[in-house]
Image (spheres, rainbow, N blue to C red):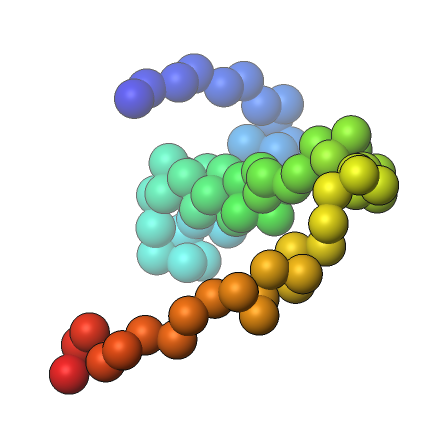
Length: 78
């Protein structure tokens, strides 16, 4: 995928210098920067409505049905 970006002269010169110092071209440096930004900023989180949910008072706790579970007869991977 191709994009055009516009940088001011100073930023463009700094990018060119940094790319040369790394032995990469400017596109590679920009690609790395965008990937890093997406890694930090693009992480998905639960929406606030989910995070603020305190449960349903009419619903039994998850652990309440644990004693009804039957242990496996044999190890299915053995």
